[in-house]
Image 1: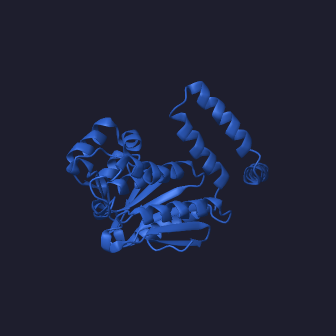
Image 2: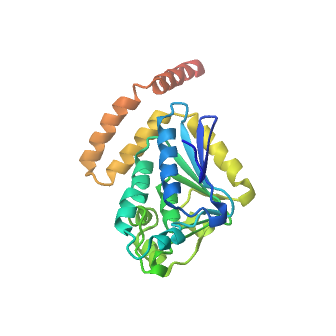
Image 3: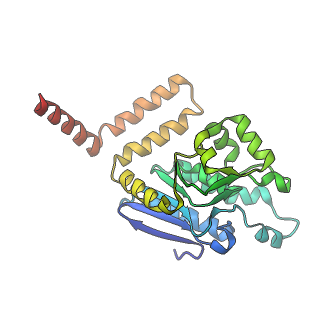
Length: 258
């Protein structure tokens, strides 16, 4: 598929998806949503890809929904249908792809852009990045997975305050609250994120994917159900060549050190 609103490359086992509407602060229109969904599907199916890196081109990660595109549709714009056919598909896709997704937050992540950042498995933010829930400014509620993901990361009180005040949350505070994994100087962001993604792609990728599945399932399970899931998935992980070789290597090294 030819892409007009994103960039897609694969290097060293890492599929890099770059939101590429910099003049619009990488705001999403229908085409961009469709292209990002296609790119994630492509990365998920590619056996050469062990990790996925998501970032934005220019000053922003993403300003969220392109409201100009909504205005053009007129007063009868079907918001619910738009979410179900677009952002909802993308968020569900991201959290079920069994490959690590690392978001490199290069600037503002606002509205739906914030939700998409939260749907990544890990977030590395530039020191000048920020998060913002702008929905309340136009009389809307948060969407794009924000109501599910954000309270689980930072707690209900902080998440609700972000939602109703629509204030900028700087990267340093996001790190303090557990919303991002690390903050680095802006000029070091891509170097850091690419290196981390490449190292991840070179690791126990099947186990990483199964860990993602187990953790997401645990949110709706009892302890007993979660323990059963762990047992089932560990049976799969323990039979992979990576695990078998790693266990043998560990045993050999232990014996040789005695």
